[in-house]
Length: 183
Image (cartoon, rainbow, N blue to C red):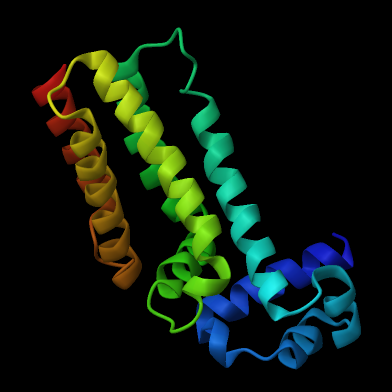
């Protein structure tokens, strides 16, 4: 792993654990085993480091969606795959999701990384809306927003209690709900 990747992973871990606003670059450098100047050389400043973490994480989201965004595929199957992959991703990338969730509640951070997060949210909602439209549901955009909110809520509850929240059961229930209602 390169120094740049080590810095990114260390910052992700510390930002998720302590909060962006309470994590100095000097601590990131110390724990990554690099100089603070190297952080600034790669990421310009702490804000640039946060944006790089968000872009990296959001890139994984977009990549995971590419498998079911094929225009020739079944829009019904795409919705189910979105549920499956979204709720699997939270477990596989727990540290990133802890950070992304906590950023919503940290004063001033929205002005730093809010645009990157909003772009990905709009990308997801657009593709869900397109699939609901192809299925022929009433109010496809509202259906997309509702599904997005349900997944978001499940993720939030799981992050608050990873030991006891029934993530897998909730995923299966949501899939069953969408299979029953729309398919």
